[in-house]
Length: 463
Image 1 (cartoon, rainbow, N blue to C red):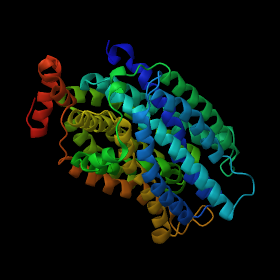
Image 2: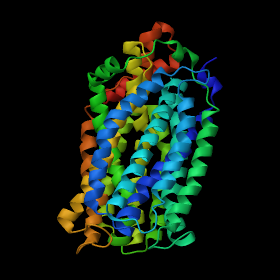
Image 3: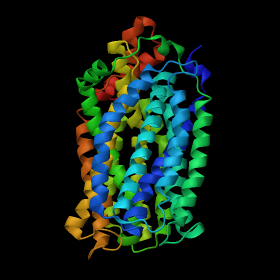
Image 4: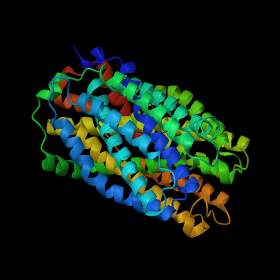
């Protein structure tokens, strides 16, 4: 019996709710909490993020390697998910529970320790959770459905961790200028996320054949990945999208405060529009994937996302920002529906070429590009001090409004434009093509048609 028959797509997909809540709370609120309220200097923030990138470059491949080599009666991925979930929740709660009066070096160290722990446990969760997608759903049409569902759950998580959070932290559990609301909110989200991840992990059924393969070696596996051109092409192009959205998620509350001149709680309305449009867009983009293939759809979505930031830059009140945000949501939902499918194709091709299922190692290596996110966000934030004089909430400079328009709109526009252009030069075989390389002529007829459609898409021909 196939894993597709034994694991309902919704049971796998709901895990995205649990994996997304903690890290999006961290990325969406940590600058507001530490820099604007507690007064952490943006230069210290940038240094911490740079140090983390170095640590992450070392620990991510090791964590993925250990996951690939794990052999238990519970599977390869599930034990890691069960262990990492409570550790991430605890680290997130600690990150938003700075002791009263802590400042200076002590504040920097507290931030550094728990920010790094949050990112590390998030890496464990996402490498193992992401590795299950190509294993459980090897056919792209069914994979697209599972991915669409999980991205839908991610949007639910974003409603909580981004849109609702400003109201909880500044109105329900705290105020605009205090931190108590963050601690309570983090505790609630931590419990919810942990429960959802455990529910998902205990319900999926891994493919036992994957565990019968020889255990991948670390250094030869890393070298094979580094020699794979698709790793660099897809990783770097995908990083343009990841960093751009990281800037948006981390800066939206300060964009509302400084660029629109409104209380932070109004971020709820802007984020709600983006998320609601993204939810509807997922249905549309998933249908486009079924018709034109993931790669073609990915390229189109990238272009839409890049253009959307122009309107957001020129928005001057909440209404115009919400209209521009709707376009951002449309482009973003296209990337949510396709980016992981393109990455999964790379994993399929690697498994077909080398006869090893090392999805954990591969995704951890891809995670390095994602962790460039933290470094570049730190550099972008530091640049606001250089160009606009914004160093912290206590020292915002003469024009923090323009500073956060550049941070939230101009920088993402440049990144996504580069990514949209570069995506035209990326060609990744369809998963059914990789499967055919292993099983010969037994590929089902409908998947063969999908591969042909995608090949036509890559050529720019109509299907």
